[in-house]
Image 1 (spheres, rainbow, N blue to C red):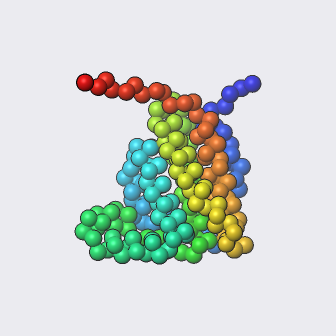
Image 2 (cartoon, rainbow, N blue to C red):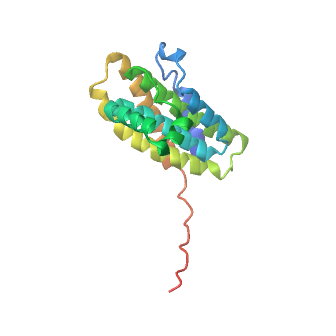
Image 3 (cartoon, helix red, strand yellow):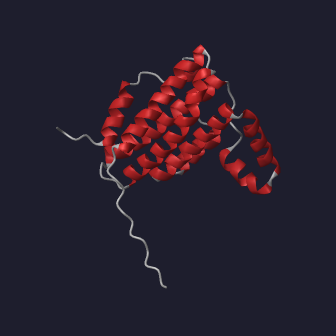
Amino acid sequence: MIKQHPLSILLCALVSLVCVASPCAAQRDHLTPAEVEMVRNTQVLDKRIDVFTKAAERRLLLLTDPRAAQAKQAQMNAAKQSQKDKELWGDLPQGTHADLLADLARIFDEAITNIDDVAARDEHSPLLPKALRKLGAAAEHFLAQLQPLRTAATETEQATLDSAIEELQEIIAAAKQLPPEPNVKPAKSHS
């Protein structure tokens, strides 16, 4: 039996996904201009995965707790310390539940594409497993938050939600196929 690389499995699974967004959402950019700039300025793969994760978290907060999201935005507008975060990330994205769900699916897809691009250039890059583990851990968090939304999803939202959930499940499966992380030896204590 031939052992496949987890990234190859992930790539095959993604190729099998035909469309993750509804036709009306295809015209919408899934990242805000500030988020696009953050992605563009973050060249290291695992750090770029962090950017995609934060962009997805912003949408998830809007989907699961809109009041908390708006309160957070108001707090950012008022607090000096949060002003830098607001300058970096911009305002919260706008849109319907279907729009935000489509954004999530496309953000996950873009994160996977970034990992696949690095894998195509350098299959042995040490950043690949690190980035896939980060994305896998984030995917588990997002999956736990998105699955309960199925009960309240409209018919329009259901297809996009199902696509996002399917992508998350594929990411988690690929991350679980990675070999275990090398053991990090604890530092000697000077007692």
